[in-house]
Image 1 (tube, rainbow, N blue to C red):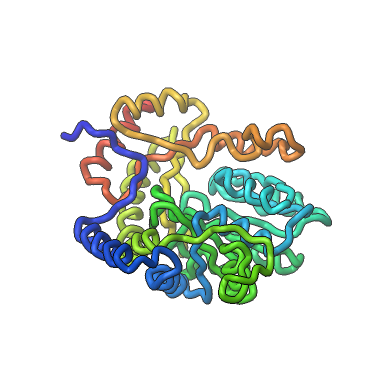
Image 2: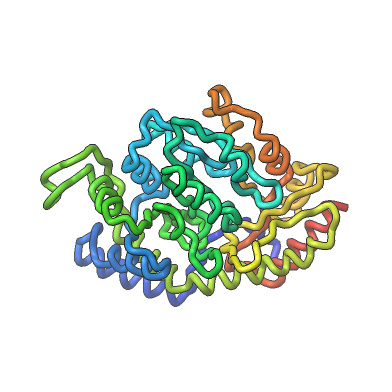
Length: 371
């Protein structure tokens, strides 16, 4: 038996892909075109084709993609509603774009934005909503939220950073809102090392994103038409993305197989609760959340698991509204469901390189930890 740590997450590049990637990197280095080359265009087309969406624009991070969209929607001095159960980059991007963050609570059983709390937070200053598909689980109320936003003239941004390949009734997440963002950091289902992407069917927004990502440049990149930044994804990163996209269905299938084993093991244990995928939907299982009974000590369980070679994580705790940067602001409102359930939630190892032995060890260790 291996005595190595079973990591919570890690990227996967098969040996044959590594060899091919190195060969493609050599071509780029010899050619000397390190950005905005054919690999970037290929990667973007692979994503747009996969999602069945018109435009996919690569950027250096998901934060860059989100800030770009928010700048396009001119959120300065207006309110944007965000799930408190998001990574800190989501509300931070609202602030960078000059907007005001309003946090919405979640539903305990889904860990996703509660539409009822969203509706309560609407004011005459609200201009849009950002919905996070947490851990790769499509928000089960997305279509309801989408319709609400359309009826109230609010933009809808999908934070699909966890959810490449997740679906709602066979439609990919990231294609329901006005725009969506994806992340390609090393822990994600698909990685480019670092990087992100903005996807949309709005051609005007797509053109804006292309300009904004290179200092607000106009024709020939010598005329600058608005205030932009430098946010371009390098060719080398795009090469990684190409090979990852070739295997995305393989990755998601493996992640779902692991999650099925976990579900079968933990669904019968009263002290544990798993997050369910709504019938007809597919989760990309960026992470596997496990909700502990209030009778269990989360810190002790995580320590026990780590001592038994099982690395764990969270999605996310503390929630955004309790983070130091926000908890002194008016955004620090009581969001009781998030505060309760996220304090009791851990995530288990879930990535493509897990072996059957690893998975079995994780299940056995969790059962020992709660007894």
